View 1 (cartoon, rainbow, N blue to C red):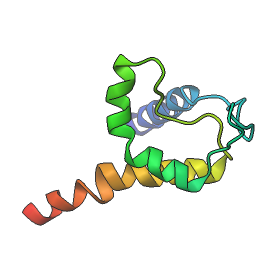
View 2 (tube, rainbow, N blue to C red):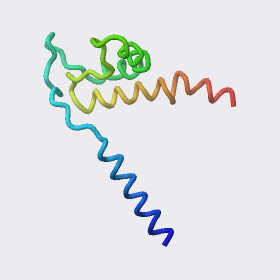
View 3 (cartoon, rainbow, N blue to C red):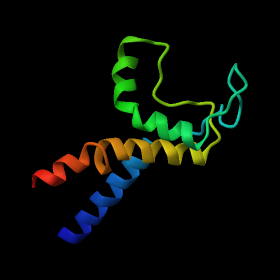
View 4 (cartoon, rainbow, N blue to C red):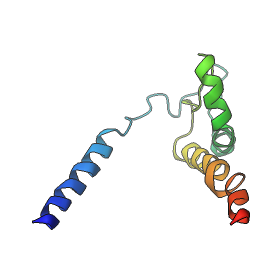
Length: 100
């Protein structure tokens, strides 16, 4: 009985998390007002500076963390890689590993 309850709880949590996923980006693969579409390198940069950009975006409505005019999967990969390098795997994560 406990196994069945745990299975239902797990399914419920998975469905709950899946229901929070964002929808498609309508501006993907469309150029911005300057005619540019952000790619992998721009995504990597945006990921690296995302903590700083987040703080600035709280006070400035013109600043966003994520470029909506991007080329799709390559931008997303660069963004996640950059954010991961900054937050866990690289810049800050390496200091924590040396202390232990």
